[in-house]
Each structure stands twice: as structure tokens, then as C-alpha cells.
Length: 477
Image (cartoon, rainbow, N blue to C red; front, side, top):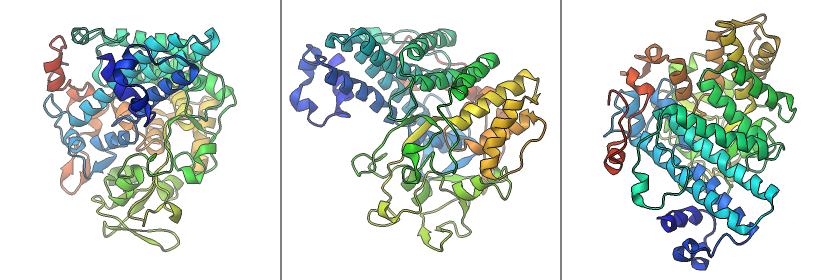
């Protein structure tokens, strides 16, 4: 089994690898002899972040609720229309599988990299990266399924895979062990290279604490990131998301999934975000989301467009793009390089997508801090720093500041507007327990959101239950 997993681990890293190191030789210990081997191994762990619904596909989960409509993804539309069960859990199961593939890669790395004989300090740095990634994969799981199966090591045989799930608390404890090690041993640098740094791990700890309602911990962790002085808001609304708009130098990115602006290195063979969301109209915002923004909000103007005919978008300079079909009349350009003709291969119908996918950025950290203060205040806060941070976000968007206080409703609306289609809407709806508030919202035409409270936890797919007979299904499925 280890050889099979190693095979999948390294195919993403080096095209010549399989010729140099056949799988049976890898399993026999012919690899892991030098730091360059270790570097290739950790690159394989990072490559697992590119799995379905961990990377740019995560935006589609906004369309499982009230933010958008997934034109071409039936599994997401099923979730939005109230169909999520063990036999119809396609999108959920894709995320589940991708996370466990990532965990497997991290476990293989952690078992084998000590064979390279690195110095203690260098070895701890690599271990910290792998444990950060493993924690990230497990948090993706526990926030959606609750208790899941924990694999702390590479299973020695297939029967070792068929074990009961741990409780959610046990999963969180395991995640915290990994993140505590990561915080202590990752480089305390500004994030830039694609490799996690200390602030990346602090940001993940803060997001977990936010999900669990641990307000004092959220404040402490976000303050540590903000007070470090390593990050600041970008002056514009495009550079956090678009490489040709300055993404590589963007000062607010704390962790991202890296891609290259080449046909081989882009987000997918079809093109990724810019092609699927924009050119194909595959992810269309709802009017309900549009109506959250004030008319002068620069986020509304820079991240979206209105298409009366549902098939064209006219840029500010008069250039008209042909899109396939925008079902809601509203289009998404938050992640699109619409101004750079050099990226069209050979036309605006095929865009060379190489944007990195941001998982943590400073605006989210600011909003986490403010939310923790709101909740500590019983639903409102006049905390000076909370006002400062949220008003910095609003200033950039060219909308009025909050003058004296921020309410829970203000904060939640701000998160929805600022973080739309970054894969956090489901995260927020679940932890706020507001499913009943989005139930029945109009998506477009006669289509409405159909929410059931059992969706606060997702079902394990029937195929997973068949493989692991020790796995207990979540309630109400």
C-alpha cells in the first residue's frame, strides 16, 4: 500500500521520478537519502492541496447555499436544493477523499524523511510544514463531518484503515498537537514562497478557534499576526487574487496554493477559475448577494458584473467578452485577469489561469478579531481596534465607516461581502447556525435554497461506509 501511495505522491512532483525510482525501490528505501529528496517529498505534500474542492473548486460551496448558482456542477446544485445523503454526496466525497490523500502523503513523508539524516533544526522545519498541512486537511474534515477517522501513521495493512472514527474533540486535540509543533518550528518570516510560515499556522489556529467559538483565543492569535507587522491590506481589490495584478507581492496574503502561468502549471487543463467562473459562467452570483452591497461599493464594481442578456460582459473600455451563459444575470470576475490580452490563448474564450488560491489573508484575520470582540460583547462592540480593522476594509471598498460600534449583523454582512466565493460561506453558515435564515432564499427563476438542519454535519458517502464497516454514519442520514 505504501508503494501505491508513494506513486501518487511523487507523480505531481517530477515527471522523471518514476523512471528513476520505480515504486518498489521507493518502498525499499532507495529514496529519502538527501535533503533534495526531502524537498521533493514535502513538495508532494503541498501538491495535495491542489485536490478537488480544497483548491479553487472550494468557491463552488458558496453556491451550495445563497451566494451563487453552479451552472455545471450538479453535485453542488443538489446540495443547494436539499439533496445531500450517503448516495448523493459527490462534491462532499470529493473533498473527503482529497483530504485523506493529503493526510496519507503527510504521513508517508513524516515516516520516511528522518532517513535523510538532516540536522535537528532543519528536520524540525520540514516536520513542521508536514504537520501544518496535515492539520489543515483534518480541519477541512472535522468542520464538515465532526468526528472522523484519525490516521496518525501510515497503516501497515489494509485492515488498519478500517477503524472507527474518533470524536470531534479527539480530532481537534490531534490538530492542536500538530499546530503547536508547527508554530514552534516554522520560520517566522513573511509568507511568500508557498511554504507555510509561523503566521500561516497561527491563522489556521485562529480559524479553528473561530469555528469553535473560543473568542479569547481568536483575539490572542489574530493579535499575534497583526502586531507582527508582517502584513498589511493591499491598496487595491485585485492583487490578492490575480497574479498579473500584483499577487506575488501582495502584502495581505498569509497562505496560498501556488500555481504557474503556463499551460502545464495552471489551475487545471481547462483553465480553472477564470475559464469556469467567468468564461463559462459556471459560478454565477445571486441577486441576494448583490443586494448586500451598497451601489458605490468597489467590491461590487471590481468583483462582479451585470449582464442583461446573460451571455456578454462589456469591460469599462468597451471591450466585450462573450460568455456562455450567466443564469442569474450576474457574473463573477473577482478572480479574473480581464485586462491582460497576453493571457488569452488564443482568445478571451480560453484564459491562461495561473493565479494562486488564497486560503488565509489579512482581511479575514481582521474580521476574525472583530467578530470575537462582538461576541465577547454580547452582540456588539465598540472596541477601537475592531472598528479600525473593519473600517480599513470598508475604506478600501469606498463605503462609509462604522463610527461608534459594530453589531453582529454588521460583522456577518461584512464577512459575506468581503469573503464571497473564497470558500468560507458554508463555514460561516454552519458555525453561526443560520441555516433557517437562508432556507427558501431565491437563487434564480423558480429555484430556492432548501436547507435541512441535518446539513450542519455532512454524511459519509455510502462507498466509504462500504469500505470501512467500522465507520458510524452521522445522525439523520
